[in-house]
Length: 540
Image 1: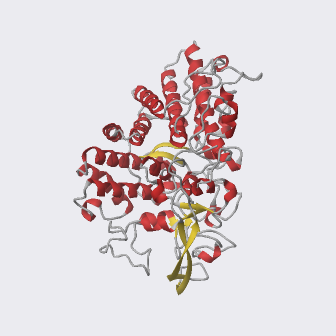
Image 2: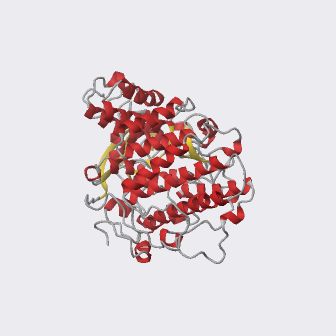
Image 3: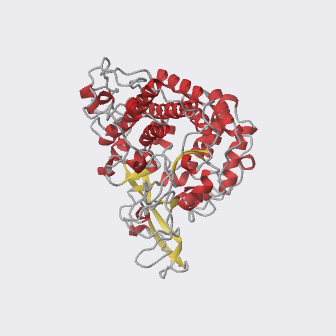
């Protein structure tokens, strides 16, 4: 399947500027002005595609700068990164500095996308080309610029707001208040919604921004900004399009083999991959064998029982001797736990059981979501799993959260969550927990987001905007698990187990400074190059 942001399909024409200060620097000698290039509709589309390219942090040419969806989860209570050289451990332990290479890459990647967007918008305004697609291209680029700015303010707080092409008179912009940037994002999204199409006809346009993507992103922006009524309305507007629904199989939602069906149902905004041209962010059957990212016990225990009750409820039926029996099916779809069967071709054997002692230093758990089960264990194998940036499940949960905050837990809130519970194969919230108060429903919705979006990168921004990081960024735990009783799985030649002995252990000691760690430091390179830049509180 063609991808909008395939590097082989994009002619990068020097719209890339590496950082905010560099972006405003003198034009390099080999700079090709976009207005000199955009003479045809195809050339205009090529430049627009270049603006899309920055949205995918997992496609960086430098392997160490790639950011996978689950990477943000290891900065939370959901997961632990046992490879400190990958840069995420510092965020979880409260030791990140302005020199962290991931801080710098995050800043540069977003501002490079903003630079491309502004250069395009400036050039298209000067262009004499006549095409009925130009308004749509402008709308797509404004969406992407809004996306990059929203990411920046979530991670850094106040940042420079730049809406024009490079200006030699303003090479060192000061920071703009986050509230003003959010207002600009909302203005741009509301302006472009009527222009964007609800869908595209041809396969070559798969992955382009639609009206549904703009509505759903707008609902996210409003939600993060606690504009509850507006957030609920934007989510409802997306639902009212009638274009989207939940894909029937939660586990299958994240597998390459189902991507065509997912693109026609639940996926609202996604990046398409093909193994031969631009492999997926997971070239990773290896993730099943030696993962750097390890789910925590805290995450596993947050999954409810299949009857819709939390494991702490005395009526839930939870059995600590068999802790993974009769749980929310999304647990088994997302995490390998002790005793869970897993299918992978390894030394000619398949259907191997998950034995924790194979993974020394592990948590007792391994990630399963996004993994195309059964692929050969081969570091060279590439996959084509698409990356879902916005899916219909988020629209439902955005609506549920916003409506609950605005009006309390009415039946529409229950109905939105029930859709997810039915898809998962659980008892509905309506039947399991009727009559919740607003505060109780808030807790349910927050946990539902944690479960539904695990390893998709939502958890970090959620705990930030809820203001609960100091409550959840505690030491994380895992298991040393030993099997005590065997039963067989066909084809493994070695048996597996239905009874385990669990010994809890500390995986990582966490630290969180509430006066500092809600935002990241401004990168050192940016501080050194821009005398008007002020560092975030608590960082040097």
